[in-house]
Length: 445
Image (tube, rainbow, N blue to C red; front, top):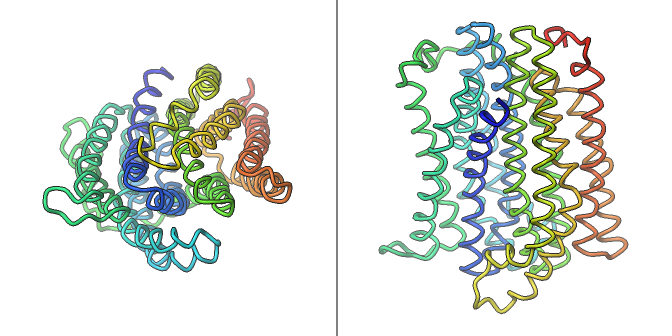
């Protein structure tokens, strides 16, 4: 069951992430300055986007539990208010992107990167609302066991993104050459198309009409909104704590140099792409645990959790081998053969991947523990653990090793290893000493 749910979810996450990867590859072929601007801009955008996905992630365990209890009304209420909160957050966050140039300058990013980064983020900000709608609908469908449609819609979005990038970045088919701004424009159109496709599926599929998801959509359900808010904002903060750690790492690497920042962005996208598989298995664990909680079946909850953890460990070991043996080849895929700095960037990026191999087990363990805890709707404790691990431990360690001791990018990445390891240990202890115990009562967790 973990594989049946997890593999399509992992595939969907991988395809979703390939949207960013194709941006990076195509910007890398366009120019290093545009690539660096895309890297830092995407890192800051993703930090904001990640908080917004807290409400989408709250929808998954709530819908899974309600569906297992055969409560169709609760399925609709949770999903609808998840959409309301996501849309509202996306609108409120828009000014952050419009005034991003000041933020990039305050963060002491390279002078040639700041104006390009601001131009990129001003356009990209308008993709936030449709992107968050996509996340809510994907989690709604995943909780109901309908993972295939999200996979294929997202795969289609990748091909659409490549085509639009070709048009907008490089100025083909009579469209003006836009560089990094073209990548942002393509992202907006792809997000709108994906949201529309998923909404049509949710509204039109006969098997899903029983939930009447969009019926009287304009009517507020304040009680359900409060429930989604209470569960969702700690998830958002926990996700931001981790994502912002990586964003802060990008900022620190940007202090070192443009080549290092470009290499960091490439290496980070490679690791994040494979991390999407862990995330898929974590989502599967959330659904399985949420269903077991709805049925009040502690045995199924525990066995599902053990299976999900085992699958994640096996995949982590496989990715460690890939990073150690194929680092230069993977980094080279993101750069034009004619790029003058190609050899330098490949060498730096490959060294980052060696460090990334070290934190694979910890990274997989922490996201799996998060998924298990969300399944039993435990989010505030994990939020505090994440904040402590990533910002109280990981960030200072990255700064100390990378900047103060002058170990450079490798030192910054070593700090990530420490933060992720602390988070993995504390989160796993929370689950297995609490709702994962043999005698625990999942419906009282």
